[in-house]
Length: 294
Picture 1 (spheres, one colour):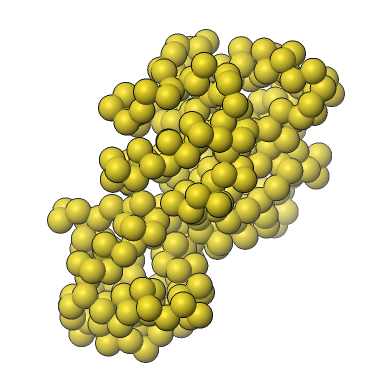
Picture 2 (picture 1 turned 120 degrees about the vertical axis):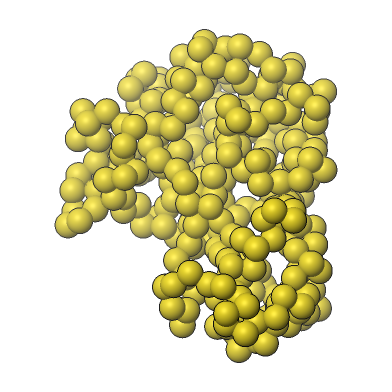
């Protein structure tokens, strides 16, 4: 899923309890609604406390007295809202990602789908889009798997990576990973594709170069999505669990409108689109399930 960012400048690194900080919850429901409208993220009654906790540092850092002040800024102050929305996306992004995650699906794409698409494209580049890419583990995993199969010497393949959080995209570009990110990656592959640099691991230049672009993309913004979703393979994993059903439907419809035929949409094992779309059919490919547009 999309990665969690560092705390905003000026915020102290402690758990935030808005009531303990004297921040009234005034405006929290309308703030929640404008965030859902803009980002697709949904915070129901069970999760609204989490929303307050994540956004309290922004309220404090900007010198505001309530969540209502942040709502007014996001909703009505067009100039200042650009930076504020970036801060909101950074604060709400979720950190959980690692190399080789749900690898069976990536292996199925590389072993079964890529050969078919490369043959059909007849020399034109094969585009793969990873969104949300968080701090970069998924697109680099895709690149490792393609390299293991020898594809980069046989075909023009572009991997594009995007996330709604600018802080996460910057972390992905910086590409410094701690041991925890490698917990599912075989040590032999870590040693082949990464080198140690101080207390972190960094990808070898040849691996880093396999990712053609890093960009900030809001899945709720048609212009952002349209430019990238022409790829015949999209990995969009572990984000729809945070979206409302309506917003999932909107995003999948944008994908369906832009993707060619055939096209392959990879979501996480915990996510289902069966009630969301008829444009993609769930198919078993290799040892994994993928949504296919035919």
